[in-house]
Image (spheres, one colour):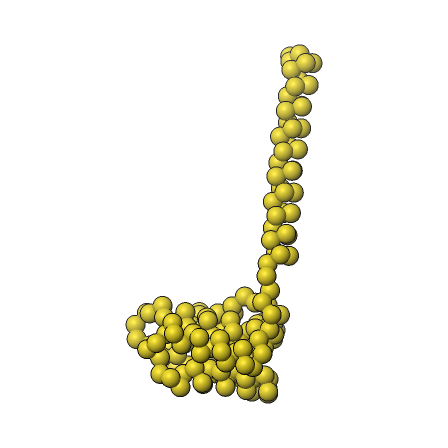
Length: 168
């Protein structure tokens, strides 16, 4: 059998390991909570700031028609004026380019700030996944019911690859 001294040392080592693991876990949770609390929440945009921000994005996407930026700005402002009438922006593009999604994300982030979203994460639905859901294909109203709470929080929604939803 083991000597009492060795057993005491082993128990002390096990206790030390547990204490270290516990402290690391507490430290990890504390860092996560601090990071979440200190994450900068951007202030809401005024109507003028929204217009300025949208037109500043124009420099990053110079191949877009000039009226694109006016359409984005006025469409988002119309939602503020009448929230029961959403604005829909359809971005058409060739192939699997990253540019349209990047543009959509930039515009959606501004819209979320302007419309005072309570959840600042992007709400992105994949057209292909929506197309696999038989219930949604039979009744698009189910999509509205299913995503209503999320849209209220996010104030926006991106449907990526809309063309992958089968037309029936």
